[in-house]
Amino acid sequence: MDTEKILLDTFSGKAPDEFARELQAVTDHFDDDVDLKRLTVQLSMLSSVCSGDQPSSIQDVIDKLQNMGERVQFTEVCKLICLLLTIPVSSATAERSFSTLRRLKTFTRSTMSAAHLNHVALLHIHQNRTDKLNDDDIARAFVSAVDVRQHTFGKH
Image (cartoon, rainbow, N blue to C red; front, top):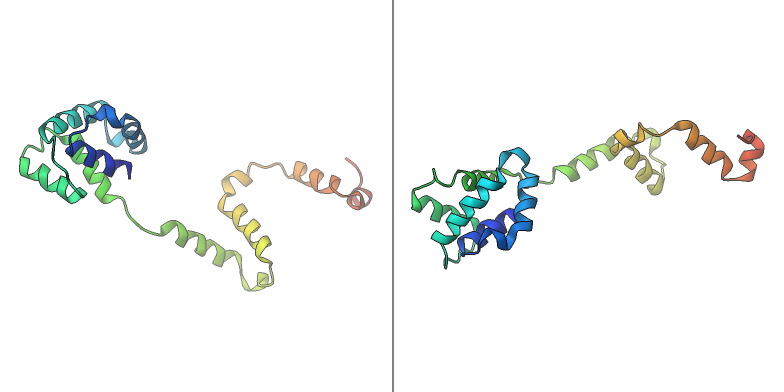
């Protein structure tokens, strides 16, 4: 959304310093793909050339840029538009979650409560973090939580 806002604001005549926070966030997000300094200069030039235009969509921005015929001058802006257009709009994250749940809730675990299933799913999803946990510390905390467990397993 920030990328789209930056492009629309630039073509309506706003200078890059008016949306510096969004610009920094976008360049941080795209990491090495976009150069912040070059993009800022190109957006400044573009803003002065296109001041007063009121594009309503990214397609208007693309059309205007193509009509200018000088895409060589605005390489970083073109990269930004390409990145914006190639970002997939999908439900892949949700699909992965459902796939994980399907693997976790097998036939043998079909009687598992919803709360227990949520806990197991979180452990599976964040496996890289759970691998770093110390099993002995978890066992000690479990035993020390209830007096009956301390009596059964002993105090450590």
